[in-house]
Image 1 (tube, helix red, strand yellow):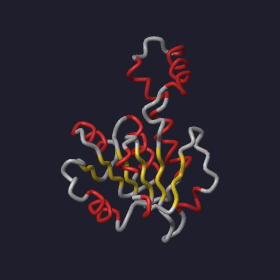
Image 2: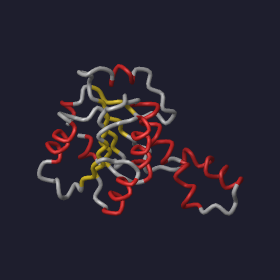
Image 3: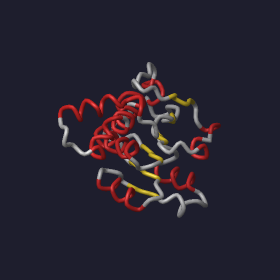
Length: 171
């Protein structure tokens, strides 16, 4: 909830956050949450997909569309905005293209644990395949998801990324 978050980092599509190290450095560092309001929008990066189609006209759109926004947004949240240190805990709400890109980037950064909260079983399974260490069904954890996440992360995650756009998650 907002009173427990020391600072909210607004997502910047270019991934520019001048003071992200200050947010995540040290043992008593403040927690940060990245809101990804563009997670469901595709238009700002349409040219990336068009460029890929120009080079490989037979490439199926469903295979290259994630390059238009999902991969850049998810990985960019980790690599360019949050920049977690190895061993930092990471919680991802939503395991669509953006959320799964967050998971893969968190693996590269050496985050542990990497926890994904996702209602769809097939997406939870894919999150595990891609490196999540724990997946939770929000319906099964509805009684006290916050307490479960605190227990699994030793008091609270250093990096939290919401890709769902649901107000209840970021409030």
